Amino acid sequence: MKRIVLMTLALMMAAGMVFASGQGEGMLDIGIAMPETHVERWQRDGAKLLEVAEEMGYTAEVTYGDADQGLQNEQIQNFITKGARALIIGNINEGVNSVVTEAAEEGIIVIAYDRLITGSDDYNYYITFDNFKVGEFQGQAIENALDLQNVDSDDPKYITLFAGSPTDNNANFFFDGAMSILAPHVERGALEVVGPAPMSSDDSAFTRIATENWRAEVAKARMENLLSNAALDVTLDAVLAPNDTLAQAIIEALSADAKYDTTDSLPVVTGQDAQLSSVQSIADGEQYMTVFKDTRDLATGAVNLADALLQGEETPEIDGARLDTETYDTGMKVVNSYLLEPVNVTEENWEEVMVGSGYYSASDFE
Ligand code: BGC
Image (tube, rainbow, N blue to C red; front, side, top):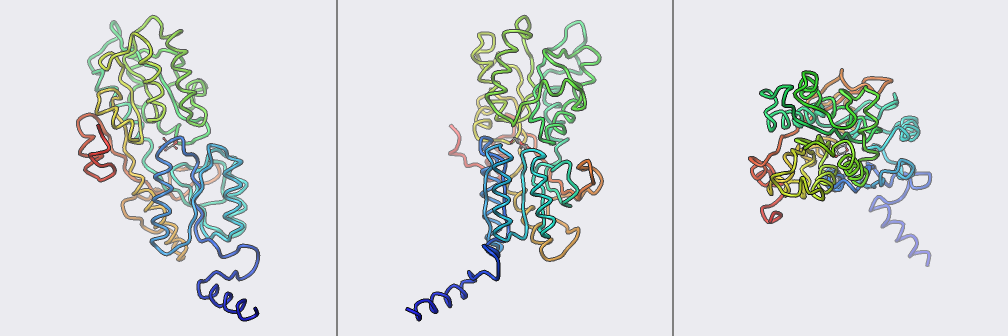
């Protein structure tokens, strides 16, 4: 009996499974906390982060928070208990700050992933895409499709505005990027906003177009409501939708209305994420555009960043990302931010970009 115990112990030591001290310590190198699964991209982010971390020889775990910050905090807490040395976090709201502080106290590296963690000065690194540019692509798509440069106030175009979650800092960037293109046309009367009309994310009306936790059903219900009220007597030419999940929900609501029940009669609807259903929808001529943010590159960049920081580097260079040390302010400090480039996707280039890059295969599409 004693021999068996000794042998088991020897085997565990060989496999590096014996804990130095404390419960669970040393079981985990990198904890990966993703916010939700109802937006498809996060499942890809999570899978790729895990894959790259393991390839680099780290023990890693991924969790999904179901858009519930309390649940995500428990998941992060669990990573800390297991002795994580680095945390990669795509948070839900500022409620994450208590566990970020705890991680800082334990000397754990925290990387804000895709979404800036606001209201905290307990971390130093952020990796994301150029989110203002994502919004600019959406605004430009509408400007081009409606030929707004050649429209004037005696025959205006009509638009309805949607934004992402009010607790997600990215939602401000997307909206402000889009409005940097569209607001001038609204101001000169060529574009009329149906429903609440904030001109920037600072505007108090922004909360009225925001979509709590990026929930499709919230956007769909709001679109239905607009169709039977403010938009009843006009024909919409465009809907600014911040991402694909919401774009698809909005298109569902529109298609159920006799005014918009054919592909040709649908207004221009924007999106982002290049989720499969939206790329298909673009191929079918329904959704007008999306923005591709290659989650494989973001995940690889984040793990490379974690790796460099774990090795003691301070402002490492990350392949494919631009370091910005001035723009991203949590409200308490400016964090080192690594920015990747988004890609505009339309009916013209979806195949080349989405299949050509190997993100999808040709057989994914009908
Ligand atoms: C991400 C988007 C995503 C949205 C909803 C944002 O923070 O940048 O890619 O569509 O969250 O999950």
